[in-house]
Image: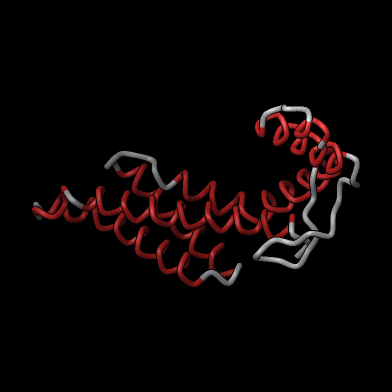
Length: 164
């Protein structure tokens, strides 16, 4: 504070105070007792988080990899019989996986997707005008379900970091 009395500007004082606060914060332990708005668990900072991040990433990947992989596989384009069979198979496995994990929204979404995949070749061979829109509807459905699964994976990761 002597700098202020000696004629230094307010900006110099702000810089000095800021540097003092930063130095004080850096001297504190890496794991603090501070909390986030979403959790009462400690916030992890600095090098101590690396092991926790890796652990949580592995846990999240183990829980969500199959579902997200099936979502990505659901984007296989094409209208021939082999692609239709693959899409129906992927939709069936995805529905079973979602149901086994207690995700009823994902299960019903997968069932709707596999029905669209199975309906597309039937509609095309019957000459229905709606046949052209079925792949687009399926893609929109798959984008929504994939986004939902990615969001859930992010929440699982954040929950793990928070200690839940």
